[in-house]
Length: 122
Image 1 (cartoon, one colour):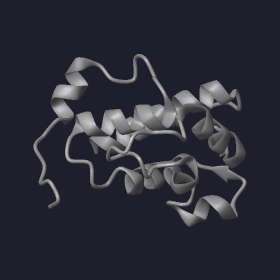
Image 2: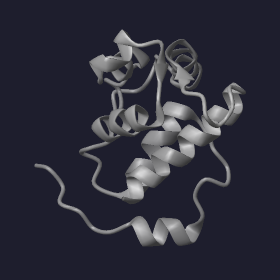
Image 3: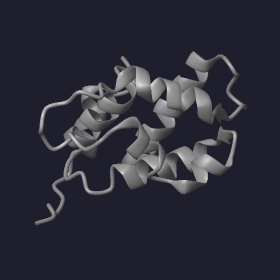
């Protein structure tokens, strides 16, 4: 539940930024442009090196068939993209990589509550 709440907060903040209003879904084209703006294509050979805006946009095929992304689809998409991350800190880092800084979305108490140990894949 913690991850979904973070995804909702990011989605709401992007709705504000997009200026379509809180009831409107985010346009796919706007989301794609925002990904390109915040993700550098030239990345070191670290663990995030394979993540490009194209890979992220293709992570959920449903995105390409619609003109807008409702909040529930955004949550599922980000859940798929962030599924294997072992900690809340890794989730925060991935969200910053994809969407940039969102001051005020997380506070220290949230981070402590959501940072439970999880199983790390081999």
